[in-house]
Image 1 (tube, one colour):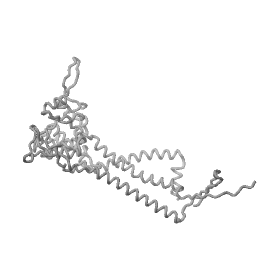
Image 2: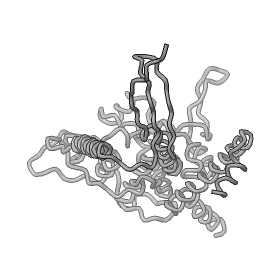
Image 3: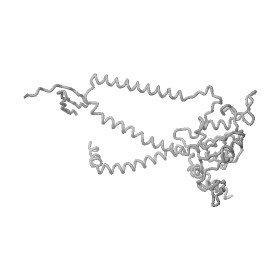
Length: 67
Length: 309
């Protein structure tokens, strides 16, 4: 009870504080979702995306130039 | 907690008394309402499942009266809901297109700039573009001229127009390949099966001249001759170019040309799942909160005492 009361007094009581909470929360939530979805997608498709494939070709090209 | 709200309704000289009852034990009426609701939910669920099942069964076309062989489904690298294209394969597929298919088939919706970041680096794409000659103009004298390609150019077509393409192929028009995997039913499986499906016609079957037997083509006779052979080209990444490898890579490349947004789409699908799954729970909880008073109230009507005059 005391915890919910503290949370309420701190964050939800005034319109100004809830507006700030919303803006900051949206920023953090969006960032977290973006990071998580990108991480999941790239780990699920490890070795298939261009960013994983590209280094192989660059290495090959440098080898050819050396030899 | 029990609170009572007294509403005065002047109409019909009745007063409406609204009790808000919480934490009250369920009566037999409420129990029967619950059973009724459950019955509706189960019935609705069965109805929805039945309708979806019926739609699915209809989508499973049997092709029993078709005039081509059934396609063999293949385990594509992009078949899952969150599976991306294999970009090494797409890159090899571009090499196959450039060295084999491009002799007859155009790819007019793909520009060199599309290759950047998908199959080639910017420098490589510029190099590839510069090797092709693009018709441009008119110049100051009003004449068309050719120049080396730039990143913003679209891939040049092998024929200036459809008439010329037909004339060069015994009257058959090689279709543009940009959207071919979407333009044919079960496009990827179709293209792979078609490219690897050339064989001798069954005994006694005679075809038209200049046509080639392929059971995966509608009618069985196709104007395009068999194109892919083992070790026909040399891949830049050293993969052994077997016939099926060539067919698989070029199919994956054509999947990419038709759906260049493919990977972004699936990445966004994953993002949408992450956003909407918590929202479902929040919405459900919010609905329960808002309906709590409505669902737990009781309305009773009573005649007010006659007023003293």
